[in-house]
Image (tube, rainbow, N blue to C red; front, side, top):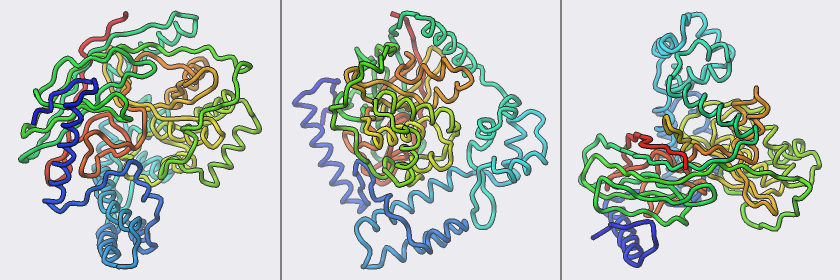
Length: 477
């Protein structure tokens, strides 16, 4: 079967998609696996039984897994409950993987990353709730990036941490460019070439690999595929919400190199010119993470405070998030039951968490809002990043990046820039949140919400994929 294709719609590609779907379905039946391909995993809205929750809260995960198996044998459970219970087994394993450090290992990690860190400091931070841990069989296990999160919460600790030269250089580069734009600098466009490499460490007969691929929309144009590791591949259509390039091979190593043009997205909005919204899409709930809970409805009413102008309503929401929510690394998105609820109640979260809260509150307020994500890609490096879009008539879609704005709250100009504007250091692969790939995966993805570092699976199971992103060139046009 020849899978070679480009980004344009063709009859041969449609035939390839159909054949792949049939092949994947047959393989799924052959190995007797559970196939879950729904766009939104709404079953996460269904809670667990109290005895399962009790054991998980106590850290008795072995007991919780046994209770899940018992419940799965109960003929009374609904289809939604069954899906929730099956996924909980996956979620528990992901949760445990993300809390790898025992107590002595956590202290050693803190000493390694924080200058002159003392044993007593660890327990003081622990007592005050600044150290992220869970209980596992009666012992504390600490989150993978708990040290970095201490720095986000307490600036004095961040000052004591070792500096990453590339991050510091990229931060300075962005600050200089923001100053120019805020001083009426002319928006620029950039031509960017990036290579994404991925490796699989496991053995398998056949691997299915998806890597992110740029979408042409709004600030992104002129996408071009340069080269690939394999002659046979499928680049999904530009119109899909999460765009990928797909490989099917027995090999362990994969890569794709591509180019795109990105423009700095700078807008001049006059609130007096804003008209009543006539867009009906992107206003509803999308369970499990975009849910209009009673608390979020109440919070949105308090924040919007009677404002009727769509642009100003969204601005009040953006202002509240960027001044109240602290940036924090989070465990895998797949382990959370409701992201917007978590951020609103804990007042912390990473870029995607803050974007989801912004989208949810905007929709509650009657302002259409949606997802956009991919990478923050500058001349120095590229890394995963998420942000949001909101719709204002007659201006159309406008960007909002609450995490970048909130991280720069000490500079009001920088904070304000990221409401309605966006820098040119972006690669967009996704216009939708929690959407299937084309062709679809047969197992739960490592990240069922987004598409930034790729996914892999064999014919029997989900596979870990190790991805490296290299900025080959970054040129001003």
